[in-house]
Amino acid sequence: MNTETLNWTAVCAADDILPHTGVCARVGERHVAIFRVGSDDFYAIDNVDPKAGASVLSRGLVGSLGERIVVASPLYKQHYDLRTGECVEAPEHSVRAHAVRIDQGRVLIASN
Image 1 (spheres, one colour):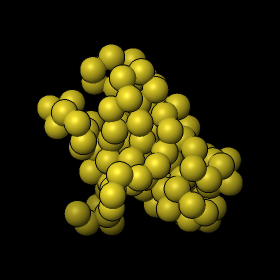
Image 2 (cartoon, helix red, strand yellow):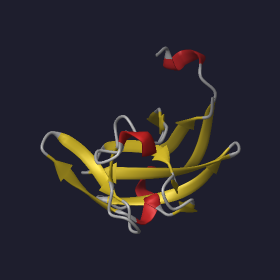
Image 3 (cartoon, one colour):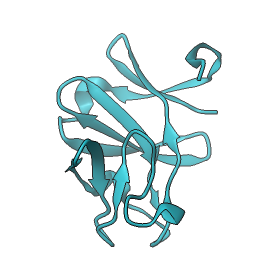
Image 4 (cartoon, one colour):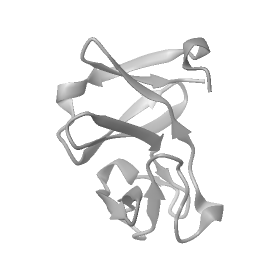
């Protein structure tokens, strides 16, 4: 993916997101969950839990399953891979992953 041709939306300061937590932001028409893992790794996936239809993934618990960095949905406890958006237990419930970058201390999400 050529990130130079993407449209980027600034959502917050990187320091606004505590390590190992998530926040929700509206990017275009989508609700996006943005996660900070460790001190410098940021990931973004759709915030809507497809099984529940609720915008809750940003409130899930961040952790790992083997080599995967995941968030557990607070409703049904399914795990979503933060790199790909894949639902580990039920791939048909996968969500979209979004490109993230940090620029001058701001979190930017690809909006297309």
